[in-house]
Amino acid sequence: MTDTTNVTDSTRAKISGRGVAVRGQDIDTDRIIPARYLRTVTFDDLGAHAFEDDRTSSDSPHPFDDPRFAGARILIANRNFGCGSSREHAPQALMRWGIAGFVAESFAEIFFGNCVALGLPCLVASAEGVGQLMSAVEEDPSRELTIDVAAQTVRFDDLSIEATLPAGLREQLIKGEWDALGQLLTASGEIAARAESLPYIRGFR
Image: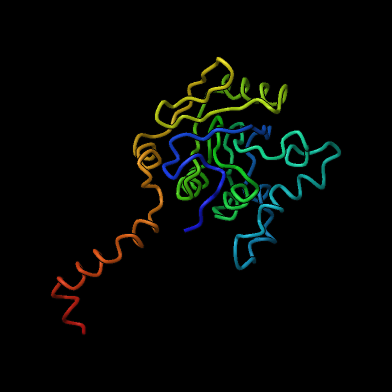
């Protein structure tokens, strides 16, 4: 299983850290990680290339190049973040850059699923709430945010902003059951025992 060191615990119940705002609607996976990096054999070096084309083509510094946001762990986005192709490389790149959780007005469905499969919470907040978070981290990049999955909130200073996550996925993150592959590997003995007990499996040996 691939893990990230940027989370507070293995259950992903709370994520604390500084934030980075990536403004814009419909930011797609090709912008998050350009297609030329899909040929990589492993995901290990993708973090360095997150938003690479946006970072090199813009006249103004991209937030991922702004030293004030170095080490940020919570990405704040607008509507339909992660749309476009279904590439798993997009959340992998963001995770390896250092992102441990997301708050946005909405997420593309496949991107959302790929993130949760990596233990990266994706919480949905109102446009007003997202705007408050973006303004807060841009005004003071040292400000710490806390994503509380169980409470469905994002907190900073004395403010708490509602940010939701579907109940089933919320429970997976709280209980540490988000990693399906990890659960299968942990239960390998039970799986083997069950297979041995099935007559239609034994019949093929």
